[in-house]
Length: 190
Image (cartoon, rainbow, N blue to C red; front, side):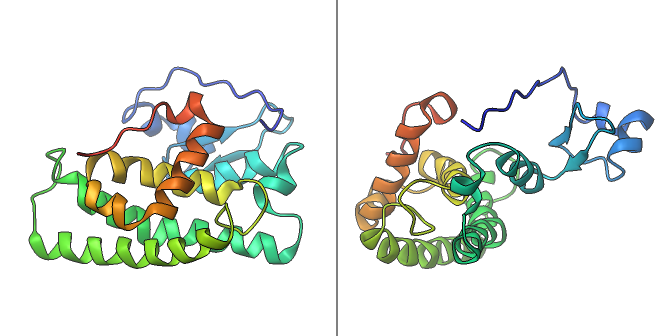
């Protein structure tokens, strides 16, 4: 959508990111990472930084990142809410189901309280505006948050949660409709 061509080369994690040639470009060995074809190449690691760079590098940058300082800040605010609160809570909710962490009731309860608190704010805001940054079109904030909610709605948050958060679910379905090739069909925990 942003007029950029991105090649996805073959990559073997966790081996390739430990090789000297990788570490020369990305010293912390992080993935995902982006290396541009420019001369000299730009090398960026961390999914948020890569997403921001890609969003800023094409004709849809104003839509994705905001055209005014106010909209830019709202978009960044929702990205940071997602990064620091929603995503860690969703990980807590799904990792024990995937056999990667033991189930701890207190952790589950805390994660659910956090996601419910975030969703309450989303519910109120999405009742007034169709997108998280209060814009007429989706932004990077919507894409980032929808990716998190995709896992949450598929593997953690059941139908009674969806019933209690109709604006959030309607927003999520709007994002999926915009990007069917990325998100696919909605999948919900029953």
